[in-house]
Length: 229
Image (cartoon, rainbow, N blue to C red):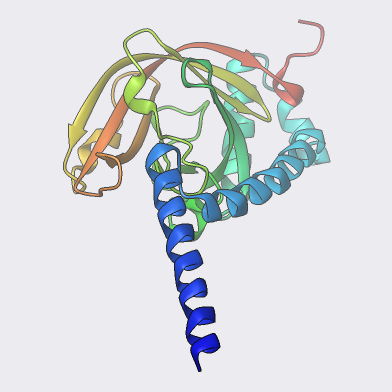
């Protein structure tokens, strides 16, 4: 009996130490178990994105692209085509922010399962290359915490979105803290804009931190490039 109690005490002590360690890691960095899951998922999404980038347009798409003489129109055509195909949880592009050292595959959708994979594109906002606002949400303490440090972004900092058809560069304009129900932050404005959202403060969903950025450059990729240009 005494031996069983000692064994139980040891198990409880070890469990307590592990829980404390988990809490400490989460406070200092991010939740470790979900981070492992998200890292494995991001690796798979990276493969999916590379396959998407290597995919060739269909014969009908090539005929349509041949009639479009500017890269802007070709980018818009390919953006609409990809948006139609993308399902929640699918890889659609990559976000890079050197200021805070992140590079993550972006998925389509902001439902719970999609955001467990990485930053998620709001379904009811524009795709890069189309008029309007592109909005992306991300976690700050779980699932690799892709947006943990977006509070460190300031006016002029650069954000890149790399889609299979173009690379879009944005410059941060401002940051706001809003209520979770404040959906006006993702509405279209009079210019191409990127909006990043995440829970605020850390370890709380009481508010949202929102980063606004204006598109400053576009570089066509793949089939969007005009032949011979």
